Each structure stands twice: as structure tokens, then as C-alpha cells.
Length: 241
Image (cartoon, rainbow, N blue to C red; front, side, top):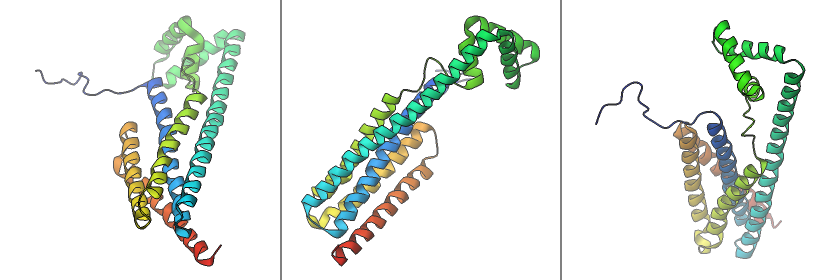
């Protein structure tokens, strides 16, 4: 076995559209899962502070799961649809400009490539070659930072958020209704904090970020949410509201 040289690839690395697609999926999935865990945990822990009735806890948890999953899906769909519409409008504008004044667009592409560090001569040659191959695609990628063949998909983001929220919400829901009454709160809090640590670790590893800050953000945020809602529920339960 030979030692890897400086030019040998030592790891797999995503580039361009593949990385963008992976990060979009990661963002939707992590946001959905974290929101499912935290919001549902905060809801059921808050209700647990006011009552120990299993039926009330189950009703609150299911209502939170359904409302949250639909809200996340709708929000992602609207957000990504807006982004996709903006991308399509920018590409359409670029198409019109190429049809109306191709020489000016060639000069613009040349200038953009020079801005990336190419010499004037090389930039001009590269711009001419890119234009001859696919002028619209070249301008979309270099000028707009958009891959016309990989526009964001609102349905993918919506389904990812819906499923991730549902999976995340099931954990605190089951943890609060399945154990005996005396163990409901500690089991729920413990399982939620472990889950948040895992999602923080997973998102950091997948996105290539530092693990510790991601884990601590998730865990501390979830702990704070449960603490606040439990205190509010306890207060309302004590006052008979």
C-alpha cells in the first residue's frame, strides 16, 4: 500500500450543487426535528406542570404534533417556493438580456471571471467558451450563483420538514404518556435532552461544523424551553386556572 501523496484525495468532499442540495435537505430536516422535539416537549411538560391526567397530556401532545408538522411543512413550502420563483425570475431576466445584447453579456461574463482571479486574456477566452457551450447556464452560475438544472424544490423541503417534525415530536409525546405518572417528567426531560444532543451532533457532522457548539445550543435551548413551560404550567395549575 502506498502512502497518499499531496495530490491523492484523502476524503470525499461535496462541491457545488450537490453540497447546496445536501445543505438544503439538512437545514429542513434538522430544523423540523429540533422544532418537533422542543415545541412538543415544551407543550407536554407545561401541561404536566398543571395536570397529571394522561388523556390531557396525550391530547395536548397530538394537537401540538399535528399543528406543528403542518405548520412546518406549509412554512417550508412557501419559503422555498418564493426562493424558487426568485431564481426563475432571475434566470428569465438573464435570458432576455442575452437575447437583446449578447456582446454586452459576454463582456459582463469576462469581467466576472476576471473578478475570480483570471487574467483579462484568459477570462475572455473562458467567457467565449462558456458562452458557446451554454450562455444562459454560464451566466446563471457565475453571475447569479444559480444552477438552472438544480433549482430548489419546495415539495422536497416541505415533506422533509413534515416528516422530521413528526419524528421529533413523537419522542416527547410517547415519553410523557407511556411511563408511570411518577416517572413521566424525568423520562421526558432526559430523553429530550439526549435526542437534542444527537441531532446537534448529527447536524454538525453532516454540515462539517464543530460538534460541541451545535450540541450545547440544542441541549441548552431545549432545557430552557421545558423549564419555562413547566414553571408556567405549575403556576397555572396551582392557581386553578
